[in-house]
Amino acid sequence: MDNREILSQLEALHRDAFGWAVACCAGDRHRGEDVLQAAYAKAVRGAVRFEERSALKTWWFGVIRFTALEEANRGRRWLAFLDRWRAEPVVQETATAIPEDDADLAVLRTALQALSGRQREVLHLTFYQRLSVSEAAEVMRITVGSARQHYERGKKHLRETLQAQRALHE
Amino acid sequence: MSDPISDEDLQALFARQRAADCEQAPAFLAMSAQARVTQLPAPQATAPVWHWAWSGAAALGLALAAVLSLYRPTKAPTISRDALAHELDEIDVALRKSIAAQHELTAWQSPTDFLLHPNHNENIP
Image (cartoon, each protein chain N blue to C red):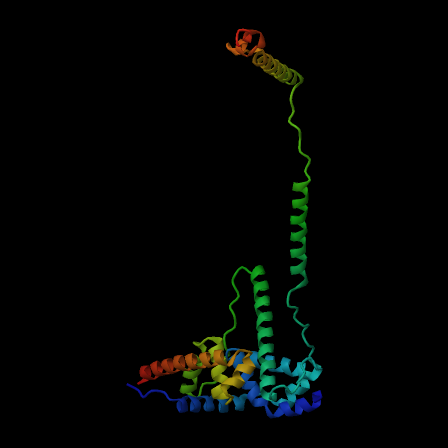
């Protein structure tokens, strides 16, 4: 499958991929967009190759996740470099605020931020992207057992947080 | 007390989030067109070269220190001529004493040694 073919298939996954890229950047839409852009650039230039060993979606989500990790590492190095030259510590940019029209969604986003990275990832992949736990494990490059553990713990934690938030508003 | 949150509640929440995200997703065509002109960042090396350079320099330094400590010439203790002559005299005296003692030992005879002598056995039948 050449790059053009892959790009045409990736178009169908574009919206899901954007959601995943944002999730990989802890809810920061601007960074998510940059990550997705970098992932597309990799696909266009042939820097990543789909070898049909898995479903296109799990492969593509793996590429996006890896790209997000790369970008995060670059960001950390750059911040560390700036810290050496500046007297005051650099405050890392927090998730970009979006126009709030749904209080429940705001609560969900806050509750997700309280989870560990792995728990957030597996819950996003299963509930948001409707992947199975084993597919999520493939994207995250972990074993199914480990993914299941993150899934159960994350779900329990998320429920507790949402429950507490509901009780607070009632 | 509020009702417990079921899996269906969670799915509904995530579905709403998904719908909200879809509205804000950037256009695919714009992103793919931009991707064609985007310069890819240099591939990230697993370990920067200077890490290896530092490790190599440290290993070389350690090896050099080890070689120097092994082959360092041992200095002979400095003794003055008089002290050396005095020491030699002491050794000489000790040697002489030892030889004299050895002579005394070889000259010693047992008091009943004559009984073993054959000249004293004439009266024995």
